[in-house]
Image 1 (cartoon, one colour):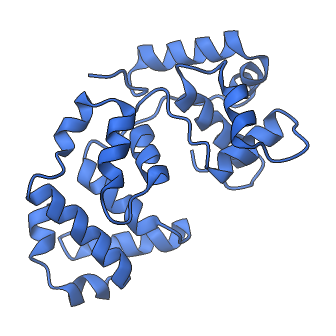
Image 2 (spheres, helix red, strand yellow):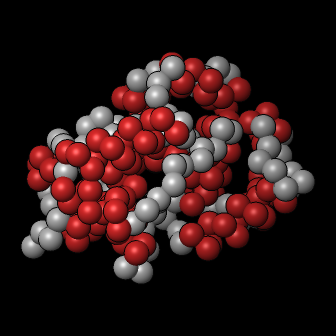
Length: 214
């Protein structure tokens, strides 16, 4: 079992560490108070949602997810029930052919045992990423969001996330967008709580009306 940012003691320890180790992060914590995260304990629902929201606006994703859930009485189905649903019904909810193939591959992997969602709690972060990366349509970024917002892992650093890069640029007053090397250099002070630091960097954009993702 790994520490989770949903636990008050872990969250408070993260805030204390960031305030002590990085003066810029300390200023963000003071200026942008934020409560600990609540997590989605339904792993299948979290992955379904992540796939549906890929490459579309938040409002469009929410609309499609609502229509999708309506097929099942307002809830996300089990993998087995999804696989028994006719494709035309799912597509009628606004799911593209490509995303339908992603949802099908995810459901099949869970049903035949290739993907054991309950085992994720025991795995380290990189192993979870490897397992999810095998699923069609789920790459590293989606896996990292799952680690952060579903498993609540404390030390995830999504170095390819544009929102976090923009937040880093603003918070640290950088002249240009940081490359991975610069990003990792700055993040050394945040370990082992990079997840919470990332949430604050997204929050910087939200605070300025730039549309973060925290």
